[in-house]
Figure 1 (cartoon, rainbow, N blue to C red):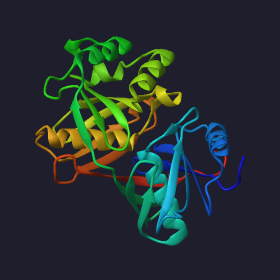
Figure 2: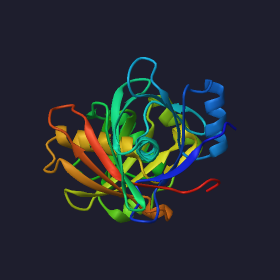
Figure 3: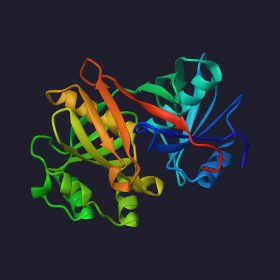
Figure 4: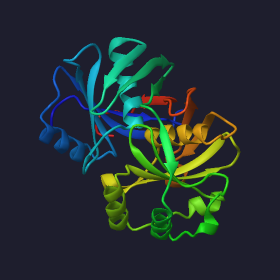
Length: 282
């Protein structure tokens, strides 16, 4: 494995929880095969690689899960913002992904680092009925389990996600599925995750995110899905443009995300949270 991979928990709930990400930064990105190998060896849902951007100021970034490259990863971007803030001081850092240009802010706040990203444009559209039925069957759900205030949608805030809003917290907590079947569905449709959410109030959401496309049963905090959800809610007339998302509780890894949909149909979303270093070998 290449040296210098830092381990950072992103979207922490105070001093606990948070989704771990690997972060590597250097002068030039390693070869793709090396990045894939490192991500598999680190074993987190994502590892981000960053190098000074040869096409301009800022950083060129790529994201890898243990099984595949992903176009954009929110929690790894928050983790990267924390590392860049520690290494270069508080500020706003320009990032160029393989598909978009984004920014991440980072600044120290006591023992934690506060970070926020501005996503690529966040868009969404109604999900085809046959895909909704297929996804419901994957989890053993039925149409009766859905919250009719939020129509199922295929949304994107840097990566694709199917959004299914569930009528109760208990139905969300009961989520189970077959990893291989989920992987086949998500890869076929180009979805990074399926975002299962429950709106406790118009502002407070609970979420679970199966990430079978990357070989991960469940992601404890998913910034890209938070951006996709907030953008879709804004564009569909939801009463709140800023939402708080509690995720990871059912995994015993509490995470908190804040998503603020910026003005304009299809506009970007600012996703914020806390991060902390979790040490080598964690």
